[in-house]
Image (cartoon, rainbow over all chains, first blue to last red; front, side, top):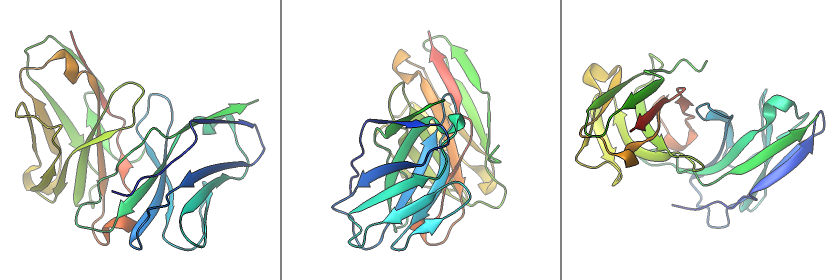
Length: 111
Length: 116
């Protein structure tokens, strides 16, 4: 499985934008880039995914580099409720779409 | 609330006892996954169903673990002769079928197992 590399942690101020980076230099042409987050004591929550083009939804935006070797999850205005572990995961387009979680990046949000 | 429910939310059991967990996925989802998460780690894949067929099992799933999904609806995960190392959060997720990489998974709240 292609792997992802994320910083261990990041801090942000409330109501400011947050850019969470992810490197995936061994990504293959059929790998989708998924982001999930996990709030304390909860199950993971789907955030966004994309293949080649940038994507926007109500939770976040996903910016994908032209060579697809990196991506950035953008939270436009961080709130205290966005404090969580964010996982960047490559999902192979095959029969089994199991998620392989790394350690993720722990986002802290300062009031 | 993602629409995926798990029962019980917490289970405390003595070593050597058997436990069973239940997962009810989103009704139209034909894929169902089980993951296990220990403290400070990301979730790890255990097994996967497409409808009622169990299509993949992780090496983490020892002979003491068994999972079923009768009629392709709810699923159960049973652990026999529990050991202290089984203490973890057990997570269930479901998704639609189709092009696998493009399908997001929806997770339940998990069942936290403590083996004493």
